[in-house]
Length: 171
Image (cartoon, rainbow, N blue to C red; front, top):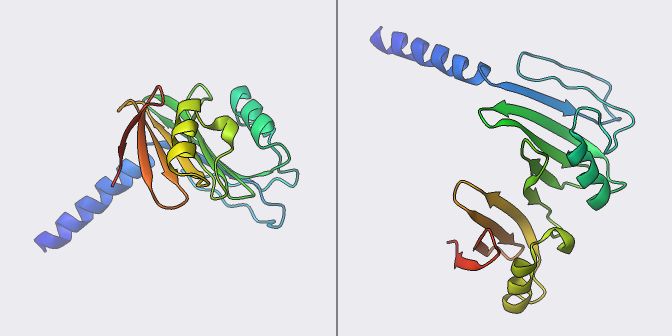
């Protein structure tokens, strides 16, 4: 009986924690005609699925149009936390990008390699010199630790400071 009460209490606490954050998910897939919604999720198919979705801030739209023009958004999420809103965008080609409250990218994952123009110069130079012909699969800015993580397509994970200076191989 005591275990049942603890399990019930844990379930109620978990439910409260997960429903106390605002989260909005928008799926844009013209192949699907169903729409589902709940307290924490709003799913809206959009037959026009493009990078000018009205729910994204102008900086995010500009970034997507400059670097991923012609690639439709398949899904995006807006999360609200103590730091403000954060945006997660997934494109039809599988690229995933996270943006901060100001619309600056925080993380980019591209299984075909992050475009060179988005890689800080010093990081690009280090990778080209030490891992010739290996592309960067993902970049992640961790401002709380003042580092940028670069995961290579060969499985090597590198860490750099915010100026692009090599720190270490992350094992």
